[in-house]
Image (cartoon, rainbow, N blue to C red):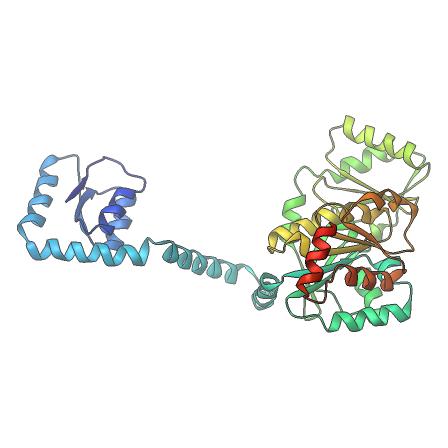
Length: 374
C-alpha cells in the first residue's frame, strides 16, 4: 500500500503512479487527492492530522482482501480512463468545444471554416492593386486557376484597402472572394465563410498591445509635410497620411515617435503614402501569424506584390513573387534568393511565379529542384 500523509497536496502525482501499479492508497483529504481518489476509486481519504485515522484506513484495507482487490483493479482501469495523454486531450477538447460553442454567436460558421483552415496545407497571398488587378485577360486566367485549387490550397489577399473597399473591388472584377483577407496594410484579418467576413479578434488582441493611436495623431498634427488622409481610410489600428519629402521626412517621423517611446511600424509606399501601425502589425506579420495560427509551413506560402507596402511580406521564409510592373521601391529585393521577379505584369506575373514554384502541381522532382535553387 501507499500512504500520502502530507497535510496539503496541490495534485499528487504519486497517487496516479500507485494507481497505475495497482497499489491501494491512503491519502490526505485535501486538494488533488480528492479528485484522484474520486476518479480512480483506488483508496481512502482521511484527515491525516490524527495518526489514528491513517492506521484505521490501513487496517480496513489490509483486513479486507476483497476491498484490496477492488482498489487494485479500480486503480489500473481508471487511471487509463482519466490520466493518460489520450484521455487528457479528449477532455481538454471537449471543454474547449463547450466554451467556444457558448462564446461564438456564429459558432457554425466559425466551426466549419476552422476545420477548413486546419486542413489547409498551402496558400497563395497576393496584393490587389497593380498586382492582381491591371490586366483583364490575365486576371480571368488567374480566376479560372483559383477556382480549380484543391481544398487544401487556400487563396488570400493582402491589401492597403479597407475590408469594404477590398470586397467591392474584387466583386467588381469578378474575382472569387478569398478565404482570407488581410486588409488595411495588415492591421485587420478577416476569414471568409460563404461570403460573410468574420473578423479575427485573435489578431486584434495580438497587435493591440502598447498601441497609442490618439497619441500618434497628436504628436504629428503640426508637421507641414504630412496630410491626414480621408476619414474612411483611417482604422482603429492604422493612422494614414500623405507625406512629402520622402526618406528625409520619414526619418523625422521615426525620430519623434521613438523619442516619445511610441511602439510602431511605418509603411511607406507609392512615394506619398505613409501608414503607421502597431509594432506587431503589417502584411508580412499578419501572414506569419496565420502560418503559426493554422500550422501552414512558410515554405508552402507564396506572396505576390508590386510596391513598397508589399516589401516586408516578400522578405523572410515565404516564397515571393514580384510582378514585372513593380515600383522601384522593390529593386533592392533582387538579391533575395526566395523572391522571383516575373517577366510578366499583373496577374500574368503571379501565374508565372506560381508555375516557377510548382505551386499547383505536386511534382516532387520540380519541388526538389526549387528547394535546391533556394
